[in-house]
Length: 288
Image (cartoon, rainbow, N blue to C red; front, top):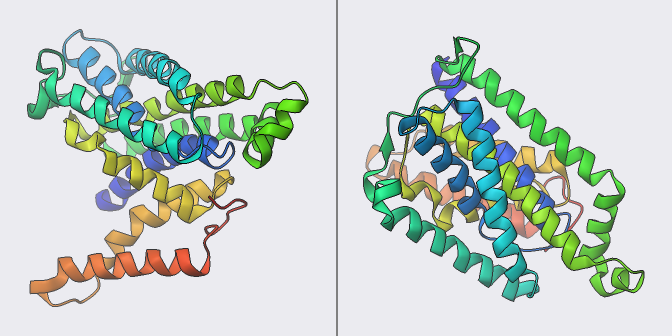
């Protein structure tokens, strides 16, 4: 059961990340490839504050959200000047810059050595020490992110985001400042991603820069593309698919000497097939 609880914790963390990214990519049509950076801000804020300064987990989550949102505000001003492929390329560069900071600012992040000994969440003397207890906390956090996302997409603000995705020039004619809307949703999404980073750091009790590379951003992006862009439930389904599929393939009876390679081949083939025959994803309402 511990193994299943572990997978469930990972799923809830990545579901929250996928939901937050879908607000930017799926609902607003901005191809951002920098989500792992904001994920990392939350993780490092929690790791540093808990191990060095003795902060409570929940306080460190709030600090991580603020740090992530402030960084998103700064990069968002730059990204607002770009569109389409250029937007993706600039966000790509930002992720690399943040990874380099995590790797080289050794006085703060310990660089490639990482930060060990991150504590478990505790509130009113109760510690979420077991995997099952942590799963309950992770589910609550994910539901909060899900609820915020649903509120946003069903509001007038969310309808403007969809209009920007469909035709930014047309919505600008009606007096909407599209740059402001894009900046606001980018900042909100970054804050939501920081929650996942804090959960991950406390759950694994160790972080290092290798977790927050460009590949991680692409992995989260793949979740929402597979699950379906512009659909919050699709983001959750995509996270479930990409977390469980590699684990399921472990139990397929491939020959021992080529098992790892065959799992990658089957995994990649399934993803390609889905993109060919269902390019909008499983529950998608929008195609990039």
